[in-house]
Image (cartoon, rainbow, N blue to C red; front, side):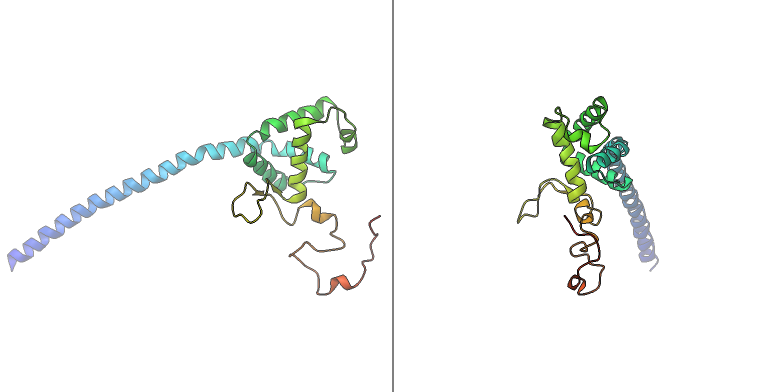
Length: 190
């Protein structure tokens, strides 16, 4: 019986030594995995931080292009989405900002009549306007679960703000049932 107990103690000490080895191995594996994850995620964070510094400028230019006030958080989401869909967007945006500054453009009306407002500068401006009016960036592909669309906003999309006094945002009704039965007491579109 003593031998048997001794053998069991011997086996349990071997097991505890091997468990310690396993524990050390698992600890090392987890530490390595976490360290690798942190190392791989650093470039993404720095890229977002670099382009995030342009979002105040994007907010100002978007306000000029849409002739509407733009929420800073919305500008930040739009800048990230635009850069993700088009890796060249930061450079194109910089060209647009320089163009507006060099031509002393301070309103949408001045921009519309500027003869040099063509090519990539105009395309960049249109992509910014589209992001805020549609609430997304990219091109949706019908009947597909994969496309390059990046979501910006739904309820703050400028297209829904145009008819806000008359109709609720589709699939987002905060009004009572039958609201459409009576003509609103607000000025009509002319």
